[in-house]
Image (cartoon, rainbow, N blue to C red):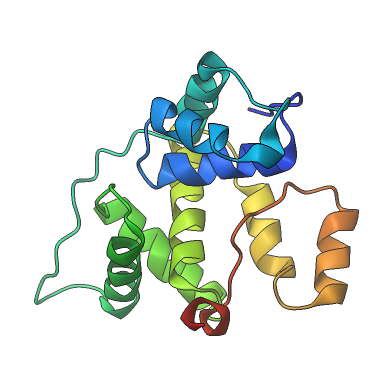
Length: 171
């Protein structure tokens, strides 16, 4: 669902905090601390709606390392970064599949961006929505350079926050 009355930077922050496991009330408190957002703050009800739209239902169960199965390296890499960053949502089996796929498609992305995108893919799938915009973001790679960013912006695609490469994440 598109929230046209919310500034893109605020919407991106709400989406990111929602996929990290923050509640709408926690998100509102964090936004209220940012003096740059004065006069642009959405109501708690609006934040609740955005969070409901952003978080999809995932019944695949919690991911666990197993002796048999797909390569766990990408999942463990993202899990470690998520724990350091304070994510409160465990990695599910379905999310682990997306983490591996996104990491293979864009190996230069940092672990938190990979997880953020995986959560967006999960939410879109849960709502039965196409993933065309997310696919376009991965194909164009606006984090790769100025020309890619211009091409991405020219398509009018939504802002993807925190698109950090591995190198940027390590600084």
